[in-house]
Length: 265
Image 1 (spheres, rainbow, N blue to C red):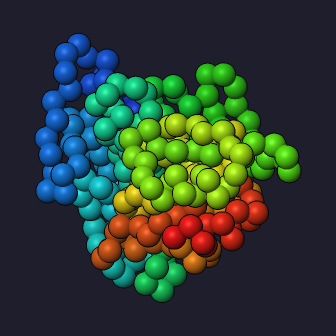
Image 2 (cartoon, rainbow, N blue to C red):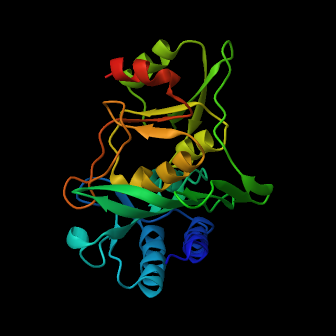
């Protein structure tokens, strides 16, 4: 029913138009949206590539995007959830830590769960994808293959991923509660993907995010054997229609840290 290879190709094509803007000389032109988040030509160009492509592949499935919807998901069993340029602030800084996120979401009552996700990092050329019927994999210039989470052993430092742009008191308190740890700074959905591929143990998120920021990476993490849980320690699900903002969440390679997470809020 779904051609996930074609969807992955759309993420790559969106990455190409993003890099056209990224590689130009001079400053990147930025507008501010009503929620004070930045918007660039690259966001819009990538969104156009993805929405036109998905509409051609699956015209019956609505698209919910950070940059505008196509169709109405309110009665649909599935929808696409898109962030055409996740990490716009990192893109503007030209530090390479931004991604293209596309997730296929399935309705469960009035909530939604990802069944497939692809996260593409245009600057590095690395792609992560996975889903309920698609094994988690990482494909890039340095090699390709299946991925699995790899929790640190007892006695080893816990590898904790933190945002490159946002960090507050709750993040510091959680890090202290975890104990001896190595801090890895990173932007966008890359933080969740490094957990999925075994390069980190935990990514706690106490700052504001929207459903399109994490759903694609959530699918990859779950396919790789990890979990994304909400404030109550249960698998995070999403509202893609009304309240698109997520609660706090934890991306984890195993359940050893759930109790710490529950007491960190």
